[in-house]
Image 1 (tube, one colour):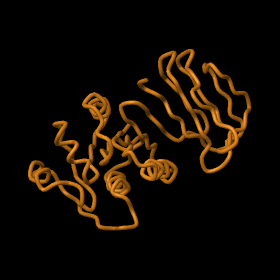
Image 2 (cartoon, rainbow, N blue to C red; image 1 turned 90 degrees about the vertical axis):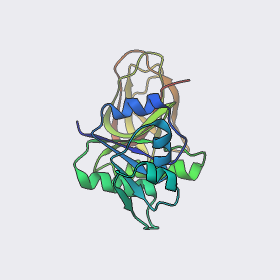
Image 3 (cartoon, helix red, strand yellow; image 1 turned 120 degrees about the vertical axis):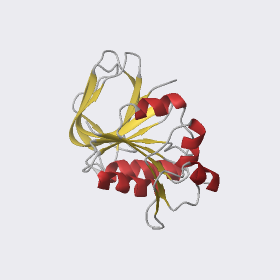
Length: 210
């Protein structure tokens, strides 16, 4: 499975989180100021993409052999610019987005919006030291150890016919809708757990560390 990683300019992930993502990837791109984080962590991207208003001159000098793609389009975020650049290089089944949480709700929701916008082109996964999140339709496998906390929310409209297996709080042909019914802090009781969705989409959030 072809896998790429984008490091955005949010809260810096740990070396462990970055290493876990990079070990399964074939392309690593920094979104603008994400290159500053990469430099601090001692990892080298294949490219730096963005409007370059956040990456420092010291970082650009440090990565002098790394291609730099300047894109000043104000209609797209630097993360989306990096994502478009990645998807133009090859077909990637999975793109992991690191550094997507930045202490601002608008940035977080903007990244969640990207999950939905690009769902026909790739599976975009947001990951940090604490959580992993992705948008699911159909059947979603949750291959996590028992005791892992999982939450899921309907996005873009209601999710109908939601059925879970191997989760503590069972759902059977349920309807989830933002502002009406969510599933928060469910717990894996056996691996693999799964969620089946007859119609609609769910944002699945796995808590990696409590």
